[in-house]
Image (cartoon, rainbow, N blue to C red; front, side, top):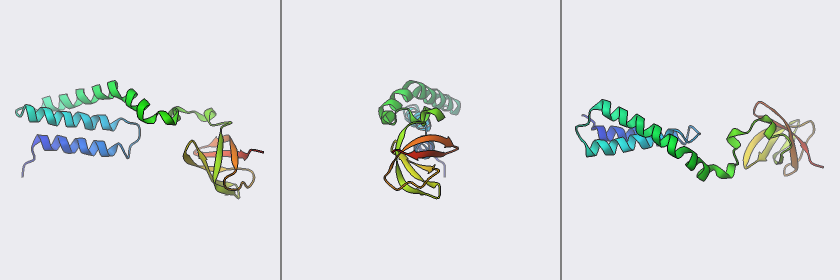
Amino acid sequence: MEFSPILIWFIVGLVMALLEFVIPGLIVVFFGAGAWITAILVWIFPGMAVWVQLMSFTVLSIAALILLRRQLKKRFFSDQEGAESEGVDDYIGRKAVVEKAIANGEGKILYRGVSWEAFADEDIPEGAPVVITGKDSIKLKVKPIN
C-alpha cells in the first residue's frame, strides 16, 4: 500500500501540531502549519517533486515562525506577563500563597497560577501568604508575611 504525499504531509502536520502540547514554546506548531500548507500545494500541483515539497515546507514553516510567533505569543500568553523570560532575581520579593502546608521545611506554593515546590526555615500553614526570598534549582525559598 502506497501513501499519497498529501496524506503524508497531513500526518506530519498533525503530529507536529500535537507535539506543541508536549513541547512548550509555540514553535513546533508552525512546522505543522508548514506541513499542512505543503499538503495543500501538493493537492493543487500533484506532480510536485519531492525536493520542491521539502523546500516549500521549510520556507513556509520558517516564514510562519518568524512572522506569526510573536503576535500569537502576545495574544495567547500575555496573561503570563513574560514568565518565560524571568531570571532568578525576578522571583525575589514576590508574594505567593502556600498551597500545601510547609512542614519540616518542605511544601508547595502557588505563584502566578503555577504550583511550585517550596522550602522554608519554619512551618507555614496552608493558605498563608508568603514572600519569595530565594531560589534553589526549581524550588523557591519563602518566608511568611507577618
